[in-house]
Amino acid sequence: MNVADIVIETAARLPDKAALIFQDKPITYGELERSIEQAAAGIASLGIRKGDRVGVLVHNIPHFVYAYLGIERAGGVMVPLNTMYTADEVSFILADAEARAVVVAEPFLRAVDGLRETLPMLEHVVVVGGGSPIGTMGWDQMIGRGEAPPSVTIGEDDLACLSYTSGTTGKPKGAMLTHGNLMANLEQMHRVPLLSEAETDVVLLVLPMFHIYALNVSLGLTFRVGATAVLQERFDPVASLDAIERHGITVIFGAPPMFVAWLSTPNVEKRDLSKVRLAVSGAAPLPGPVLEDFERRLGITIWEGYGLTETSPGVTSNAMGAEAKPGSIGKPLPDVELRLLDEQGDDVEDGDPGEIAVRGPNVFRGYWHDDAATAEAVRDGWFRTGDVAYEDEDGYLFLVDRKKDLIIVSGFNVYPREVEEALYRNPKVAEAAVVGVPHPYTGEAVKAVVVLKPGTSATEEEIVEFCKRSIARFKCPQVVEFVDQLPHTDTGKILRRRLRDVERPAEETA
Figure (spheres, rainbow, N blue to C red):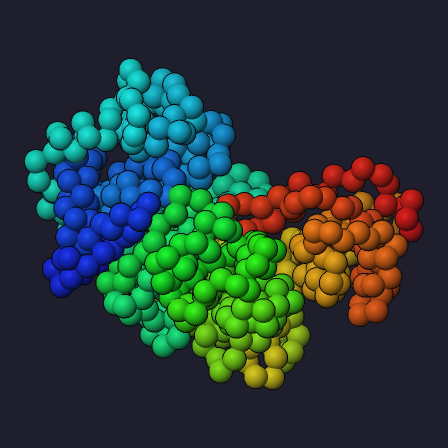
């Protein structure tokens, strides 16, 4: 089944139901289907055939949806591009994917300027909005060329999306996600009663759709059941709260920075959030104190989940259990097999931390043009995630950290997540991140980068002493840096590599 068939089937059942609301204007499922069919015909008129890659550099506007599902309907493979990427990053991905065309929104034209001259495979640049410079084609011009969508047979093993990893370390790799992968994960989530949407739901869609979380969870689940998504171009805490009240939002798919920002919004307790029945956090770890504060102040439980680009994305959810345990990523979704492995690839003892390994129909086919990386990541049919977790006595999983983020202090393992949880217990701390920095005596030292809540102040010594109350001395920060904000990806992951620059040697505070 083609993922585009989701809209086609829903449109046949609910043609006059709003699929999207953008800038307070509804777009019905019938209208959405017609726009997708027009896009598919236009894309096919460019010579795009089954399996050809097409880049999409478009922000959260309806044309992203038209382009995405139009490409799928035509049999192509979408390559979503982060709108924060530089021209060099866009060029790298389009070249690596051997994209034959790219759809770009007018604000991001600079990122593709001149690429047709440097990328031989790139034949077409289609511009959404504004004018179309020489060598490009306007969106309306493209769909005007098409007559009828092509008849293309798509199987579950055919590629749907080439989704590049965020590249927080090293060059991005293209995760090959099939139509079967995406559809399987939709069904896995739909089978969890708490996560399953209904026709009557109104979903806040503010996470960037170039990310698999928004693409297949926020958007895919909504279209599967015939619900309505309120689409916002970018996250703004006040504007999103306005939308929740105005449109009666019932479902929120968010990331930790969103929930932190809402808690910091003046008079947030006076907002009418009474219709929100489900709030889900993903893309990055949600600090336990944030979950507890959100429930205490706003009466809304946040159900944390865990997933990766390579798993389409869902792997686990607290919604699989009877409660939302603070700090837990929950239990595996239906049809997801999960193991915790030691360094030798054997299952760890009960309660011990181990690397998460996953197997299931939602797991990707491998990395595009990178057999070595695929062989390293997928061993004996199990995808090694690089994330470390442990399981409690109730079967709930707790993410400890990324293996590569482990800090070793005098031979002792320090997981940044544990230190960050200690920092978040400080009532003055709004946000915190922990990294390892070189140290001449201990090998590495713990560095904390802290954002304080408005109207508060704290010293480095105060922060360190607070941590000593709950964690061992060797785990406590030796360097504390105060900043106005932390660097994040668009989906909330902390860019740790930017935090490792030390302005003074760690030994000064040893």
